[in-house]
Length: 403
Image 1 (cartoon, rainbow, N blue to C red):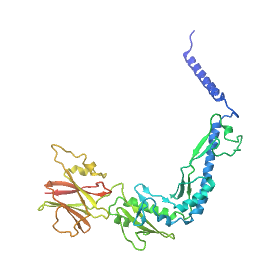
Image 2: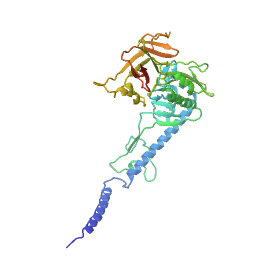
Image 3: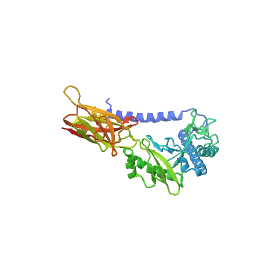
């Protein structure tokens, strides 16, 4: 007797499907339970728990909103006159650092008032209450729990539909436990924080445009609004400590705001206006560049490896550029550097300059030196600033022809 193989294969497929359906019903129905046995109870309990958590969070937000409305009446520019966490320079709070803007932290009095009002309703203490991006944010390490075990909130009897408690619609021995953080974030309206947000956006624009400029004042003069003044609102006085500049900002009807911005850059600080000169009679090389307030330490790099010019852009650290320079027997390339500081310099700007001295001539820094390896030929020079003990990048080279 011959059996059709295709038919047998189809037969076994049908048998497998039927067996799978049967196994499913056996596993899902033959469960020893106590109490009411209803399908979908796990899913229903999960939905019910998350729904209760969302209701609780909504109630917390509303409680916080009411508490904030009562407590923030006195919040204004006085809050911005304090250290926001980025430090204080010349009595002015610095609003930013390398990581970004520091958050406006509400003082202890305001925080205590908000906490007192919220705790009365929620029993949750908030360790940190800050103002950020147009909202007051409450942060806590507390965790709230919804569950089926005794002693876990909520303990009140539920009367929704067929079920009266969480236990009544859980398949034993399973139990429900759902945790969530009761923090809040409440948008604040009216005039609260409006001036702060406006000034913050203007500050962001200045930081974007000027953080990579060594000559901060020139850049700020071109980019700041007329409401921004240096140090004092009554009379501009440009002061700079490192890369930090204090400001006074006028607002419409909300007083004057005093702050400082840190123009420290993670990117490129370009030394510009570089020129070179070679005095053949004295064998003296002089390099000059623009003086930049707040920058005292510099390094001059020079080389006869002209291919270095093709290594930029993009701007690179000196070590990255000269890493590929050929060296060893058969190559006569060199790369040298000179470090110097403006801690002491000659302000007389003599015609005949001495080697290894720094001169300040009409707002230009000039450094002269003798190197006998600079004979006939072409050379490349670059100047970089030293910021926070770190070298900035090289953005371009200036050529010098010795003949």
